[in-house]
Image 1 (tube, rainbow over the protein chains, first blue to last red):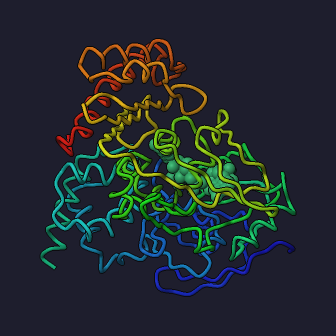
Image 2 (spheres, helix red, strand yellow):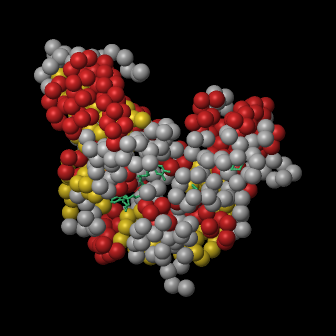
Image 3 (cartoon, each protein chain N blue to C red):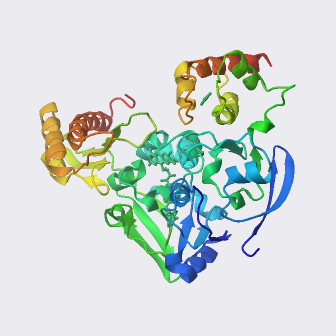
Amino acid sequence: MENQFDLSLTVNGVSYQREVDPRRLLSDFLRHDLGLTGTHVGCEHGVCGACTVLLDGAPVRSCLIFAPQAHEHEITTVEGLGTIDDMHPLQEAFREAHALQCGFCTPGFLTTLLPWLEEHPQPSEEEIREAISGNLCRCTGYQHIIDAVKLAAEKMAAG
Amino acid sequence: MKPAPFKYYAPRSVPEALSLLHEHGYDAKVLAGGQSLVPMMNFRLVQPAVVVDINNIPELATIQGDNKSLRLGAMVRHAAAEKDSLVKESAPLVHESMPRIATMQIRNRGTIGGSLSHADPSAELVVVTTALKANFRIQNQSGERVVPASEFFVGLLMTAMEPEDLLVEIEIPPLPPRSGWSLKEVARRPHDFALVGVAAVLTLDRKDRCEDARLVYLSAGDGPISAPEAAALLQGEKITPDLIAAAADKAAVDEIDPGSDIHATAEFRRHLANVLTRRALEEAHQRALGGKEEI
Ligand SMILES: Cc1cc2nc3c(=O)[nH]c(=O)nc-3n(C[C@H](O)[C@H](O)[C@H](O)COP(=O)(O)OP(=O)(O)OC[C@H]3O[C@@H](n4cnc5c(N)ncnc54)[C@H](O)[C@@H]3O)c2cc1C
Ligand code: FES
Ligand code: FES
């Protein structure tokens, strides 16, 4: 097809090359073209945070980036955090503290918090509330998520 | 929803970008951080035939400064400006506005130039650059011009730029000695677009009288709304609580023009503007006197 973009990028450490229509959103590219359905799509206008991924290590909304804009960049999705047998301490903390019910919002919280906890190893509750303020959760009421972040900080400090 | 099809260009230099904008004119849209443009494209409120992505032009993302001005490249991201020590030192009002702009994920992408080009009357930077009398450096294929903030914002989501224009740099002059500043707003959550807000800049003379005052409001009309009459009340006077209250009344009753929506009535916005103006002027006054740095 005319007007296709030759995209090469790294996702969770794996290099991919694909032809994409420039209007392909990064969120849809990850889900539909690469089958990485851990990244969720809620609002498609930047408000809910479900689609958050790391672009060169920084959390961004994948619904507000066209796939070609990720050309020659590194993306980390929730699939890059850990596996079912070997979960990241942050994921373990979410499970242990009951920080999810339906789980729709969880990938966005995890990708938001991963670099943040590295920069804030001993966060206060107020700082945690601020850090997660760009992610909506319709189930938990947030309290368990805050507990999980505190637990994750302890786990990560313990190594 | 998904955006309509478009042709995508990712120029590597400003001249290349300008030539694309010249060629495609009204059909083209500049893509900066995409944090306002992409939502509008996802909703198909805008359907540009051509998208000129300026994210691969490093020369647009520099922060420079000397004693004449702080110069922010249009592609400086909110997150970069927030962390930059030169910005904090030479334009503390800009620094202070950053954490109030959306959430961290949006600030990691959104740019100074994008926010200003979008000219949303609720955007902190629109108001702050007006209060600081910033200048906007605009280029197109035929040359360059510098437009002051007072002429850059011409209406709701409208600027003095034409489709072939590219905003390349924002110059922020330093405040005179004995100046204080403040930015106050009320939002339902800290990073949401504010219901109403005000940027205040106050300069005192050697006898502590007001030499210059600027009050600019956000979410209070079709653009950044200045309150020159309220400022005139302060001019030449010693700043007292009574005078501050009079200026706040003047601005909130006569000079701003907020609307009503699902979040707040116009009347409530006027009330908030009144209270915020007092707090902002008090804080700016303290800072100008060299008193407390932080509240
Ligand atoms: C959920 C959410 C909450 C937000 N909350 C706030 C908030 O509280 N306060 C606030 O101020 N903002 C807020 N924003 C907007 C955010 O700050 C955007 O980053 C900003 O408005 C646009 O910047 P951008 O770089 O993303 O521009 P883009 O979206 O890329 O572009 C915006 C417009 O400007 C044009 N443009 C961009 N750069 C240039 C240039 N150099 N020359 C000419 N034209 C150009 C584009 O063509 C487009 O029309 C929010 C956004 C979202 C999604
Ligand atoms: S889907 Fe991207 S922020 Fe909601
Ligand atoms: S767990 Fe259901 S939305 Fe958060």
